Length: 231
Image (cartoon, rainbow, N blue to C red; front, side, top):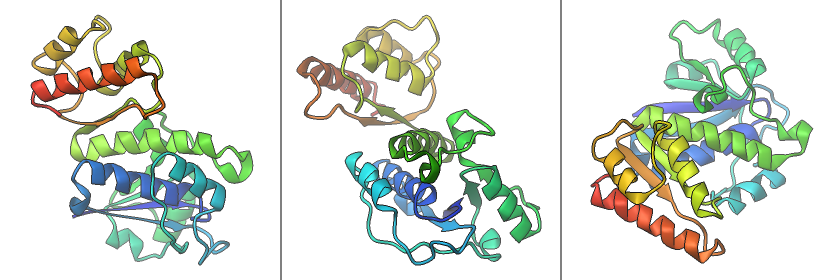
C-alpha cells in the first residue's frame, strides 16, 4: 500500500482538499484500497478544527464528499510512515525539511509539480479568498498525481458546454499530437494504436444542466472508449 500525506500550514483548506479530491479520484478509478491518503499541518493554529466552511462548500459543489475531520499537526515520525509527503508551497517544504532533518529518501514533493507547474504554490484561499481557484489548482494536480500513481488518465467533461470543448479536453488530458482530428473515427484510431497518454481512463460526463447536444456527444465519445476496450 502506498501512503501519501498532503501538508499545508493549517490543514483546514488546501491539504484536506487535496486529500479528499485524491481519495475520490482513487475511488472512481477502483484503486482506493491500494493507497492510504491523509493530510496534516505544519502549524498548530487550527488543530482540532474541521475543513474551513467555504472550502467545504466548493468541494461539495464539485461532488467531493467532505466528512467531518480534525486538523492535526505533522509529526517527525510521519517521514517514516508515508511514502510521499506533498506540500502545497515552498514554505511547507521548508518546514518539513526542518522537522525531518532534510529529505534523505527523496519523499518530499510540491503538489503543483503534478500539474506541470513546478515551483508554483497552490493558491491559498486564506489570503486570496478565491476558493474556486484553489479547487482548480488542487484538482489539476491531483489528476496528474493519479496518473503518476496508477496510469489512470482522467477525462473531465463536467465543465464542457460546447462540443469543441469536449475535444479540447481530450487533447489536453490524453496528450494527443497536434494533427489529431476532432472526430470520433480519429479518436478510435488514436486509442487503438496511435500515441497517447495513459492506458486506463476515468471519464467524468457533463452534468444534467449541460446542453443536450454536448451530453449526447459525450456519450458517443464514451462509447468509443468502450469499443476500444479502454473505458
